[in-house]
Image: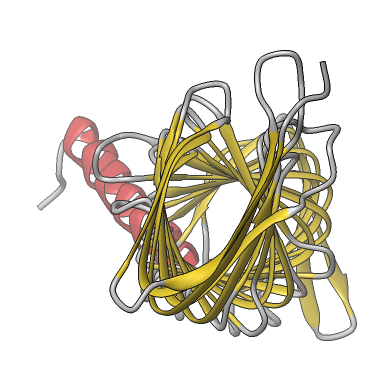
Length: 367
């Protein structure tokens, strides 16, 4: 029986469409990426491998990772992609931007070079930013490495970091800075930390700095071998020959515990072999001193408001002669010392208690 020409043509179209669908599906299965757009596409065979060259407004997916660039060379067999020009990579909460990016699918490694910028979006929509000359990112383990002129900024914690090398384990929320690292905590004032190595835990909730640690702002400087800083509590613990210095006072002990408020010192606790020397004016020598087993300093707007010392307390206080007062000096020992200090950093009252002994010297003015 002879079928009508219309039916025959329809059958042929259906068969052709079927084979075309099978062919395209097979090609899609063989292709390890999904191409969205390119102004120009060239496929060449290099030895036993096909290389796809994409030019202009390149946009494709490789797995769940999205890529944009001006140019891309895709090596199908090696599963390597080399991209150049305005490269953008979007992978979950991480966005990467660079002049040049190489993607090694088998290792799940992204290597970025040139002017590199990376941003990570937190759950609260705040951003952590990284900039460097080179970045390596391992997708499976979510390990992030940055090299040369590294800068990082955490919007949520208002923390900036500078270094020559950075490592960040995204799953563990842990990282460290090496090669001249510097952290600045800038909410209202600025507190800076430098060391040979700075580590951060739980998204900067805890910061640890080791060796040649320097903590400073416009009011003071602290030096030690080791520092633990707790961001939420605004508390710092200094170990390893800690030293405090400012225009008005120097202090030493085996351990310092400093409590901050808006990056200014609110309270300082000194433990074991404590010693402090101070003056009433910045330009004067620090002739007054006190030592004890335990000391506490309370601050108001960055200035010492009072001091307490306990244990084996020894102290020396000298009052210089001026138009309103005589010269006096007090050298005393006891078990408890309290010093009340006025706003202008002048000593208002000194109280020594328990087993007190010492000497008091004074000199009247000559009229």
